[in-house]
Image (cartoon, rainbow, N blue to C red; front, side):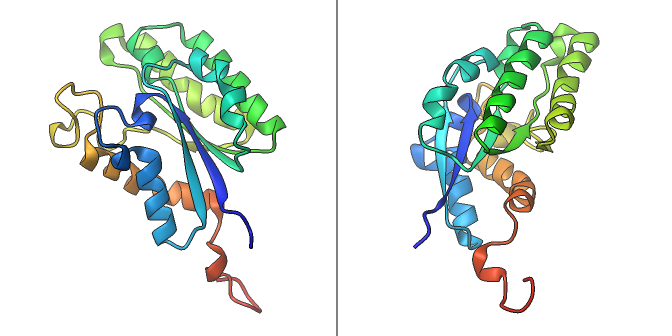
Length: 196
């Protein structure tokens, strides 16, 4: 029997599940929804709260020890919150994507936006990192990980930064079509003599 497809969720507190129950974290909710859709997957939670792109790059060896087939890279929120140099964030993410490609791991890059308090020039420089890297590496892009969730008090914890359980569910709902497109149809949907 084939082993489940291993999806590495490499990220920060938004992946790790800061402030929500372990069973409500993004990797757990994503795995549950994918399994309900017929995919035999294990989603590995490689999220570390407070992590920057530099932190993600530093622990990539550890994250790859589980031999993932696919990776969702969700890093950059903390770089943006701290006003770190977008050029450095891009270099770190570039190194992560280069390494994942070398390990034959298919990648979905999740984009992030910087908070508005650093001004429009910083925000524009930061936002441009993700589509540029996706094109350079030929990987799938989900433009904004917090799409539909950011700044909605019903979907966030009191800090206004971290999604609550319903917010995580909304992230999963919105990113799911992109993940499914990347994975292709679940095995049970490919009929003999033709495609599902």
